[in-house]
Image (tube, rainbow, N blue to C red; front, side, top):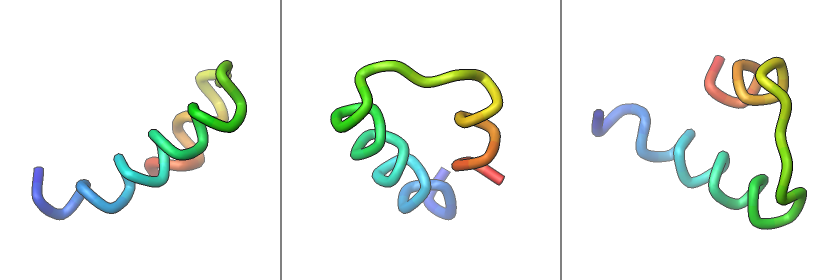
Length: 31
């Protein structure tokens, strides 16, 4: 979990900006 923390922060920031996200975008951020 610790290693994913930075990606989760990026994801949260993206969601705050976009409010919606596709599965493809989600996987791109986590990849």
